[in-house]
Amino acid sequence: MDKKQPPGLHWDRDSLGARVWKNGYDKSWVWQRGNSKRMTLGRWPHMTVLEAREAAASLNSTGPKVGRRTITELHDAWARDHLLRGKSPVTVTTRTMQFKKHAGDYMNLRADQISKVDLMDFRAELAKKSVHVARDVTGHIAMLIALGDDRRVRLPELKRPKSKRRKIADIGEWWDTVDRSTATQPMKAALAFAALTGLREGEITAIERSHIKNGWLHVPKPKMGTDWAFDRHLPTQALALLDKGFPGKRPFEFDKIRIKGIASTHACRHHFVGLAESETAVPRRVMRALVNHRGKTDVTDGYGEVPPETLAKWSQEIADLIAKKMKL
Image 1 (cartoon, rainbow, N blue to C red):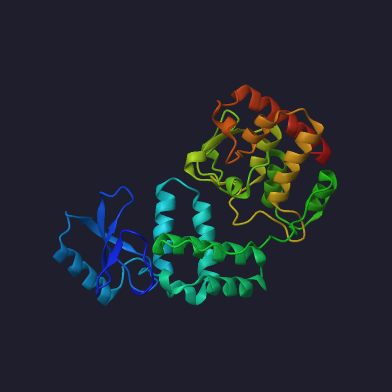
Image 2: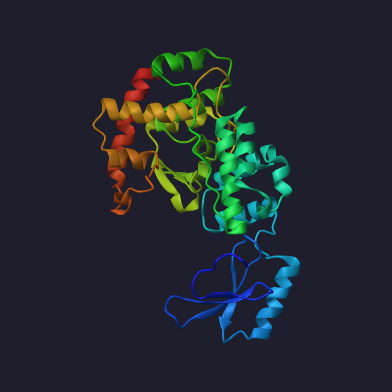
């Protein structure tokens, strides 16, 4: 190499060098070609000169193994590890669906074949259809590049557009619209259940009658994964709605709980929290427990559980308020 090298770094004709660490005692054999990242081959004298040169010769002919996996292979490895650690299966399903639908030719590329500029151009193309998808897909690919090529790709910030989700301004008027719709009785019951409990759509569609005991629903696989399993008190109005669902073991066995042109369960969840906090004196900690929501940086989440009797009290009080407005 012609350019000036850092002190203690010496190279030979095969790009094999001995690097001396700052303490002056530790020496390592390293390999580098051109502007690629240096790789440590081993420590001297544990690795001999002959062994180091053989390793360097192999890398000169094949290149480093890092980055050799395709983006698809890296995604599959990420998904397995994500589930192994008890993380959200919903995240894996969503990312896999987006990946297969939008990643296109990137699926078969190796991590070392994708540059930052490539991802920026790809994100700009996806953003023409959806900024949300563009952020999610390219952000996921950038994470996979870091996983497979030990290279962090930081894209310039792309702000999310303002949400276009329907919101519930008046729960009474909203329920009148739902009740007058041509939706089936189980669908209407599922939406009413969401309005009265604030539970997520996936948590409602997965309900099995065997999960309910003494007025409490056990949610074994919430959105965030099995580590976040919880028990939710069901108010009397919500329990009564179970009889209006399907007769089998899962009363609300839908793919999606929504009626076209009418707010979905996500809007019900937002309304549940907003109404409870504005018109009752429910403590913030109790509300977070009722909807199973925890902040990533809120250390108070580990300060102990809210007593069941407290959760039951506020669960019923909030449901009474919402049921009154819905005229149930």
